[in-house]
Length: 201
Image (cartoon, rainbow, N blue to C red; front, side):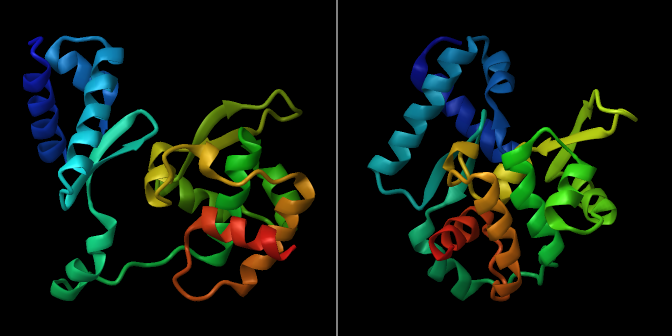
């Protein structure tokens, strides 16, 4: 399959059926083209949907692409739906999720040191939610597990990549963590929260 329009059509079908964001290498293998060619087709699809002002858009998240609704239509969507109540991330989980992307690969003891409290249960829960993952073992004494963020982390916080997070040094990150107690209910966007707390420091 080498006709670009045909390939883009195939990618649309695969994204629709797959549901979750589709990896570029998986899509490339399915149609028999290179990863670079597949990436070009996906990015053309992004432009195609934007240019026709579609209510559905294609979003790039790391090396994955998937369908999302146009953000300016959110109020209309909300008016006809009654979403199930989701269990929000706890303050402790948000604290860990603010630390990991800046320090990864990072050990539990390093996370504990920044938070000033044990994080065992919180880390276990975030691994189960697939927001962070095991990245192997440290060479430190006892060879503790190293943790890093996942593709699911980027999707959850609506980030294209980690470069969208604001730059913070160690002192600013520690100050940001202390500000999590001031979050309003439902404010879970780590990038936005950290960016805001940086302005307040």
